[in-house]
Image (cartoon, rainbow, N blue to C red):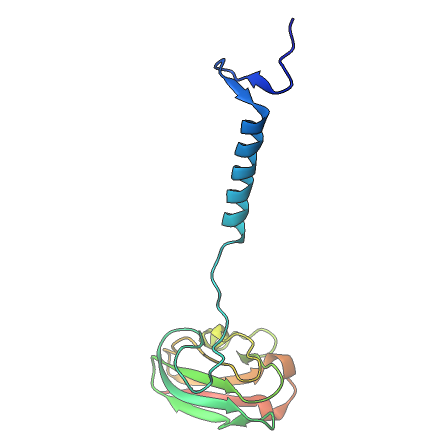
Amino acid sequence: MRLPALHSFRSIKGDVVTYTQTWTLAAVVAGLTLAIACGGSSTAPSPNPGGGGGAGGSGTVGATITIGANGALSPSSVTINAGEAVRFVNSHNRPHQMSSDPHPNHTDCPAINALPTLDGGQSGQTNALTTARTCGIHDHLNDTDANLRGSIIIR
């Protein structure tokens, strides 16, 4: 039996395929697989707390809560109409992750949990809050800080 030459071999169909062609095809397949696996989109929060856009969900913004430079919510309670969202602006120099009560489960008003962690200077908004009720909020990263607790009243 004769061994194939080092530079080529025969495929099952009998075609001559060179090692260069084989490795080129393998590199292309590996590159495409990597590109697909690493692809995606960014959901980074808006660096502009006063403008449009921002991370979070859907719904018309009915109120804005600011985390002030002093690290406290202002106002600590807002009232919105059912179907509206709340925008959060972080003017503090530390990151904050505003979440629905109770800590750590965040199950009372899940639409609030659409907010990403906001670094200083970033803003984001909740998803639309559709059920009339009062939702407690807190900073998941600082859950014992009373200055970072508040409420959203949905009417």
